[in-house]
Amino acid sequence: MIQLFRPALVLLIGMTALLGIAYPAAITGIAQLVFPREANGSLIERNGAIVGSSLIGQNFTDPRYFHPRPSATSGTDADGNSVALPYNAASSSGSNLGPTSKALIERVAGDIAALETTKLVPVDLVTTSASGLDPHVSPEAARLQIERVAKARDLPVAVVRELVERSVETRLMGLIGEPRVNVLALNLALDDMATKRKSP
Image (cartoon, rainbow, N blue to C red; front, side, top):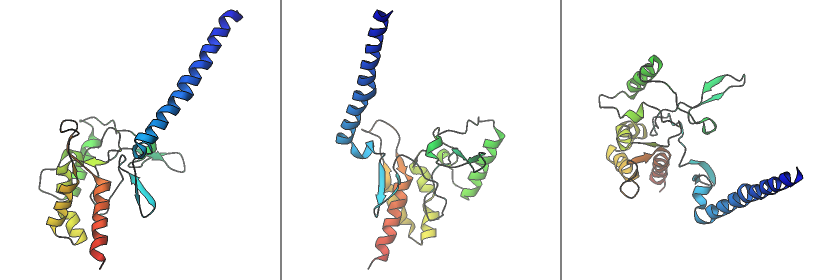
């Protein structure tokens, strides 16, 4: 019996040390050396404070900012009840509502009405992503919001439009993904612009 137990125990300890300690430590070390920003969450810092991550969306609702796509993530209140908590990184999820869901149809219709536009609404402005954490919108979704943001900030439309166009990220190597705009980065650029305009 001991003859069978000993090799199994040695193999368990060896594999735990190799795959549970040495390999993760090596990969973590390599990531910290080669991609330190990405390995630490792609955090964005302003004035010595972390304001977010370029990989996780935030729930902007002020008309002075570009708005992200809706998020279906949730959280719990003090009583333990589930409540809507947009862009909750601790609870990444989609809504699981199907195309015939009355709740989904009503929510999308309400979101379209809230946009107060006669233009064609890009689908990502009224539908959630599978993770509920998508930090990007399509260039069309950003362009649709230009006039609202310009009016709320008392800026020329052309200035805001130029900022949006400069913020469009292209396909990786010209092939992978879709053109997109990181909402947090765009809103921070807007704030930076406002700061520069105020300074003498």
